[in-house]
Amino acid sequence: MDSPVPPLPPEPRPRHRDRHGRGMRGPVAPPQVPLSVSRAESFRDLVQDSVERLERRWPQLADVDFVVLDVPVTQEESVPLGQSLSAAKDRPAQIVVYRRPVEIRAKNREERALLVHEVVVEQVAELMGLAPESVDPRYGQE
Image (cartoon, rainbow, N blue to C red; front, side, top):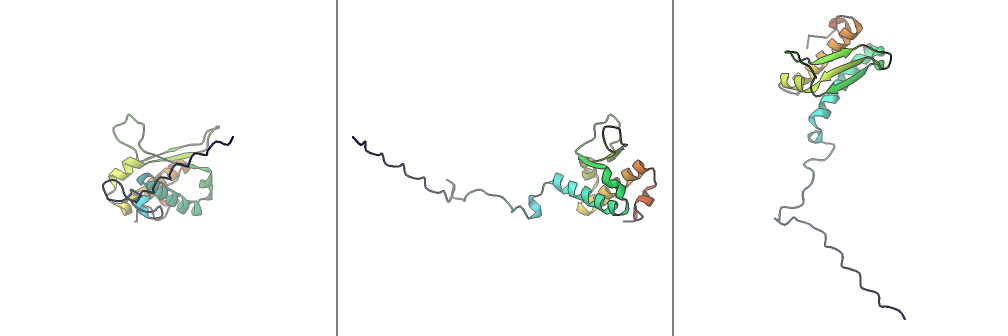
């Protein structure tokens, strides 16, 4: 004997508003708008722009790892903005830029971009044993 098929449960109604009547929550800005880029991502972009600018003049920088860390792990009184580490047998040369100390010293995005570039140039110069002016002739002029 055939048993009766139970009816399907009703589909839930789509929600158009939240219970307070202000609409559904969504992103504040679409992903392509700069507002949705975090400060850390924006800072990494500044470092990458600086590295690409230097790599045109110094192709050997392609073998160097550029790393962004939030803060240095140091016991010193002065806080470094960056650090260069020579290559070892198990790792390539590395340049570290510390995000928070740089952000604290810069008042706006333009100053931050200039400071990031100066830190990268100084660390590349230290790694290569050159003067910063020879790494980037515009060093200190901007």
